[in-house]
Length: 210
Ligand code: SF4
Image (cartoon, rainbow, N blue to C red; front, side, top):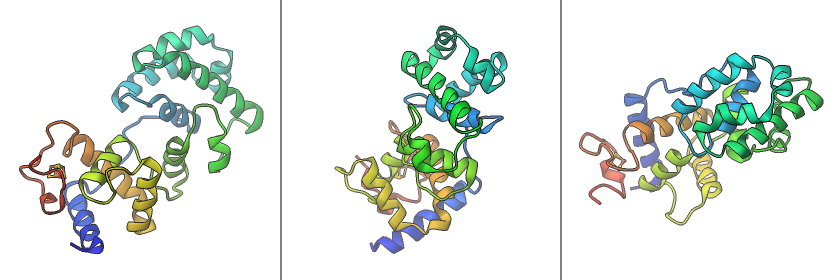
């Protein structure tokens, strides 16, 4: 099947089953979102939402977080794993935002990527969610689904998958498709026991039947 035919089938199916996908992290401020995305490394959005609810109630402003004791933050975010590193990054991000960006999250990928604990994926997620700047962040779900659907090769790394997806799909659809890939991977095309029976993408799936 031609790649262009595949992309049409995928977009049509995603629009049918996931017409209005969105980010599942809850947040009340731009810095709160940035911190949530940083905290979401190697854990689930559900767990992050529970923890940030407690964290931002106790420390409701950047200044409150700046003055917070790091060991208390580490304790609050412990359920997310990697709490030592994440609490250090959180404190450093808060400090950077206050000192260099007047308390605002910068609308610039290079500046975002200089923040502690903020890499390519996190900065892309922030750009699309807070500023609606097109990007195609590749998380574990996007990575797996892209390979199963033959949009990327088995040996491709995250950056290669991101490049391929941006080349294959129209830029105006990147943000919506990013969310659709995540939701499809999270609720349908799961890592273990995907729901293949009713999936209309069987015809182009490399994983079907394995
Ligand atoms: S057939 Fe199964 S593995 Fe393939 S895309 Fe559909 S849900 Fe995923």
